[in-house]
Length: 252
Ligand SMILES: Nc1ncnc2c1ncn2[C@@H]1O[C@H](COP(=O)(O)OP(=O)(O)OP(=O)(O)O)[C@@H](O)[C@H]1O
Ligand SMILES: [Mg+2]
Image (cartoon, rainbow, N blue to C red; front, side, top):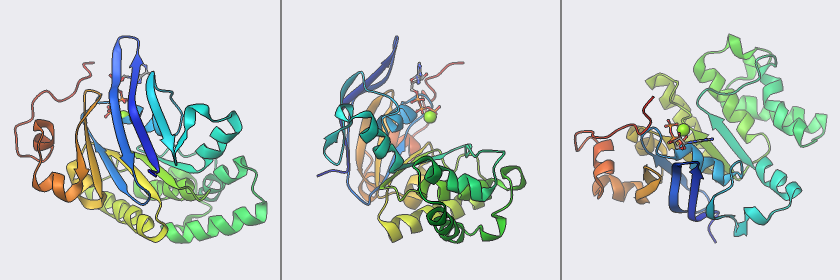
């Protein structure tokens, strides 16, 4: 059984079709990269997986369960087992590193002693033990994202969704964050869905890739196959094999 399965999922916002009959299968332990231009529908797709948005058409299954049929409390439980990592970190500025990591565990009502143990473990894992009492404004971008990663892992998720997790970071910091994420995937078997607009990110960490263009998945497969034999124009242009055309769908 797939861990995550989208079946013919469409999402329409008034006259915009953000996703057009998208089907995706993700197996446990995979690192799926979703690549596409701005406006392709990447963030919309990610929000379908944790039930933050409902499809206009089609179905989303997590471990074979249709999430549209979950009770409110089961949906809440499911969400607490799906971590999120954001481009702009989304840390609570009035809380310390320790408190930011503890926060998702407080929300689900875990015991203080249990939280303390888990935060220490996570601080150690992301290399921020000496920053436990710092505030986000006192951290570098890379350190902030390490807090974001620790927070995403706090409730022992089965899935972590990353929306442009490294897009605000310089290349060296990007590499160190990608390496940390890859180590965590290997150590824990957590499944990652990784949105990006850079093929180099997919190449460095992902096992599988889906190329999204104007709400459609135009190519998908394991990274080695897609990189060695890209079929679609969009994939080829992301790989630098074709001049870029089109580009952003959003004209602002
Ligand atoms: N809440 C919303 N209301 C109306 N339109 C929306 C909404 N969310 C997304 N859209 C539209 O749906 C399309 C896909 O948006 P989405 O945010 O998924 O793209 P994206 O691939 O994540 O882009 P980016 O790389 O810029 O983050 C866009 O045309 C966007 O304007
Ligand atoms: Mg987006």
